[in-house]
Length: 259
Image 1: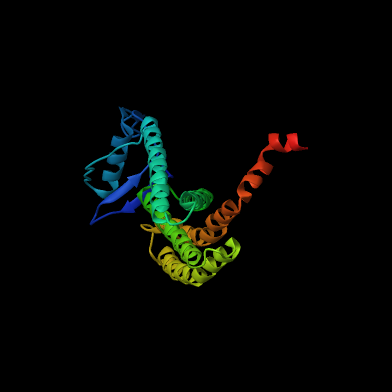
Image 2: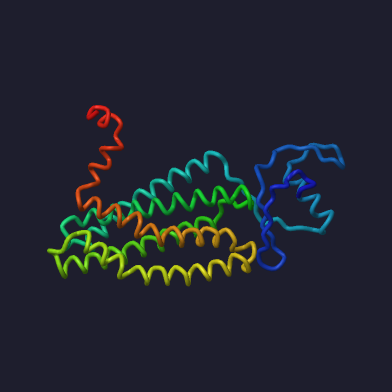
């Protein structure tokens, strides 16, 4: 494939003697070096491979156009918005015994978005070094990180809710601190065990699961700390009424007027 001008080719072994080849966009017409005639690039690739490996069967080939990728991105954004709203509604219903149950859902989703953005950033950086690509394994990894992250956050929030209902008169900082402390050991131990498996599969699992394991390894680390340092911290500031003052300081117009 490098000799054909496609050094970027990603070749994965499927079942039996089947292989999946991913390339950049192919040209509709190129010159065949052997005959000098104009042929489609996919035909040139087929002919060259058959000369080296014998008769080949290409059951299917497809390309992802710019319009299709734009449509996929738009649908993905819509799906994320719908899923986020659904999670907020569900968490608000599950925590309905608390006064501001919607805040728990909003903070959980904010922590979740943080995790996804950080994982995407790491994947983009590592992609320049290890030639990672956005594929089905990548999507599966992101979905797994989302599930893992929201689960960690809900566990912390659930313990905070239990402590609040047991002692509603306690200071809010004490209630949150107790809930985080009681779940800290469980979250760290679970994450370490998952991380050990991820590292083992990342180093010994081969090319097939590499992209998935990279996403999951980073996601486990990020999801563990974000449930405490992002979602819970944001929630306690909101409950204390400090969130409005913090956002006010970040508003340059308001800060200028105050000065």
